[in-house]
Figure 1 (cartoon, one colour):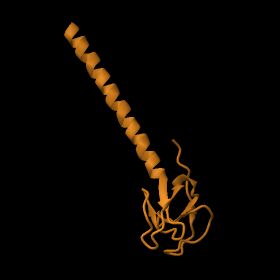
Figure 2 (cartoon, helix red, strand yellow):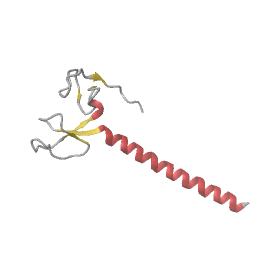
Figure 3 (cartoon, rainbow, N blue to C red):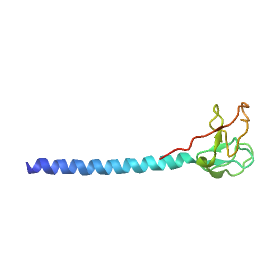
Figure 4 (tube, one colour):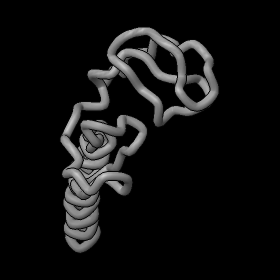
Length: 101
């Protein structure tokens, strides 16, 4: 009986550790998705990590993706902080929904 209790406690402890680690990874991934890098001259050039613009070679600047309030319904990479038209297809940019969480 003692062995069963010890095994159950060990299982519960290991499950708790794995769950906590998984939650940390999910939070880190969410933050990484919200961070984008954009060329100051070419707003259509974006990346999820720092680097250089493929058109002009300038350093990409870090921007918070959550700060962009409008996006193209067809081209999710086209975002803006004000209403306007998509440069790729001409559609109106729509207001993005704030993510809760």
